[in-house]
Image (tube, rainbow, N blue to C red):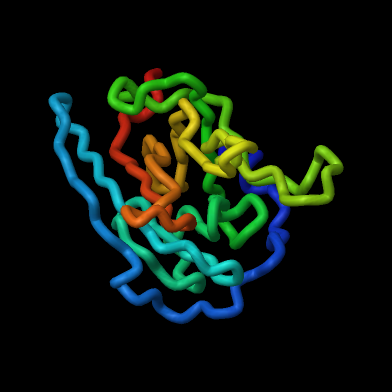
Length: 191
């Protein structure tokens, strides 16, 4: 699986980040950290990704926002978009397995296969690339509200596996672009 992931294209989606300076930590709010009954640690954060031109880069292993030039970032965020390092943005082998209908607290072991990366636009809609985490939300065309879909992702970072779930797209005040998500340790695929 990892050999195939290393062959992915390294194109950058538009718009690319122009400001790669360190993020002000006031834009990141730690929401919770917990150790579950099985001993796996989970954490959640809310990140201000409201800027239409700036990507925010996040390292799942350390739970920190990092500079784009830091090779440890795993996911990048801009508004409602999540990009994985290596599919279209950056160099790496980050990939995700999509577990539709899964319950975060019940995902303990990473699957063996089914991992995907971000891909160029393949449905000819002329809009965005096909992001691996692109199905995280449901869109209400009447209210124009995004709500998290019933999906959990298992993300392979090249260093380990993490379960990942988007919790919200809005701040407590209702402002869009404030991505809340949780992620946590997960057991290696069973032999």
